[in-house]
Image 1 (cartoon, rainbow, N blue to C red):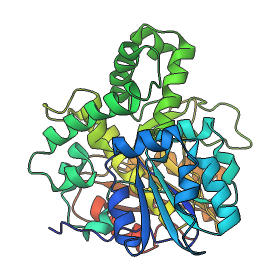
Image 2 (cartoon, rainbow, N blue to C red):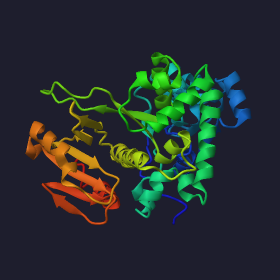
Image 3 (tube, one colour):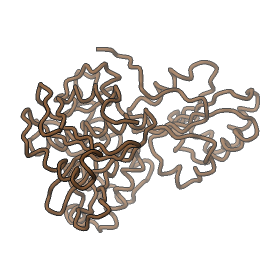
Image 4 (cartoon, rainbow, N blue to C red):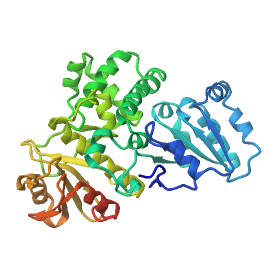
Length: 387
């Protein structure tokens, strides 16, 4: 098993924000791609943090000697958002290029990140994907423990993920003062993690967490801003009237889900395994779309009667529908949602795929069904989603 990975995110030649949750490997990626003649400011260094917080203009003065085109890295930029004003000024006046990494977009968004609109691109770094480990992975294990590099390589991923959850709560939430009531947020987080991949009813979550519905919505905003999760919105068929309108919320990594839900010490139950499998595959697709710069939005589709397709996206050439099942046997009834969707959108416009934990590929009623690893190989060889 390799200990160094070639990441699918390619080096940029323009100034950029590099965003990603803690532990995805942002610093390692920067060191590999910008190791020569690069000035680095690490805001995890307390001395550096205090110095630049007190006097952000030091960044301007300390880069005055650099020639145009030079690179400057500011790691964990969200800790001193005021530096963005200096970055803006340096880019404009000196044509110096920046890599600005961070694990939270919340303070950046609140502090004028739009000042850099058009002057810095935005890239996201995800946990490891199957291609980066040469498809040498045990899908069942990675569903349970996720794809964060340190978890993937660890002999004891449980311990790492427990520490990860504690660090997230302590440093991202408590120390950054992202919420006033830390106890309420911790209780909400466990409930949200246990409902990963389910239709999200904020009223029910608020009742279970003992907080107001508006507070729950604000907590979900924190999860998105700290890049811990994302909304998967329902697809709206133009001529359909009765459809589910609630979105689903997924976390960025299935191992982190189990850590935050308090389920790490236990084997995943059948009720957990399905959403965890979805979480694993959907995040891989998200990474593929971002790294290949296709960036098609992902949706799910579900009728009011409960007929569902787990993933639906519109491409430049049609639609792709994907059904995910964490079982070793594929049944014809699993195709029902994709067939219904094909009737609505046009049979020749929808490419239908199934993904499961079986060992052999098969085709049932024009649906190509793949074992998980085979599907991932096809995905990264551009045979699933046509750009």
